[in-house]
Image (tube, rainbow, N blue to C red; front, side):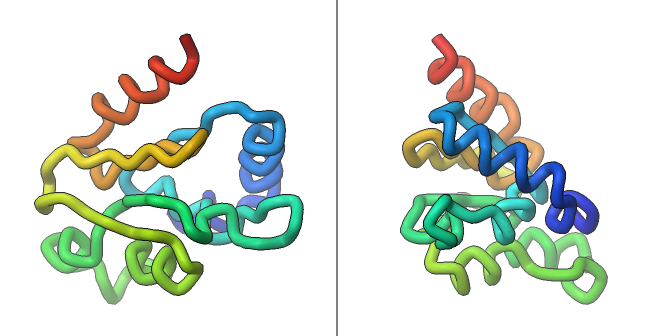
Length: 120
């Protein structure tokens, strides 16, 4: 999450994929890159979108709230995203248009299945 959220190349690739109507999918902490990803009009890509990612309560459970550079749930809410979560450690995925996000590692399979559906 530390490097991906600030990596200009990754951010540019994601923005270009989205602009080209290609699906994009992220699980666990990987949605952190979306806090700096913008739409062509400069708005945050996640603004008004239904998203999920590693929750504050999961971060607390692993005692990393003071270690990680930001809490994903909080950042999404600040950006105007419609963040939601399922039970801690359970599979939970949100799909909003071309954007697929999974809450935690247990969401990987469900997120992959959603991506495969979009690619067909």
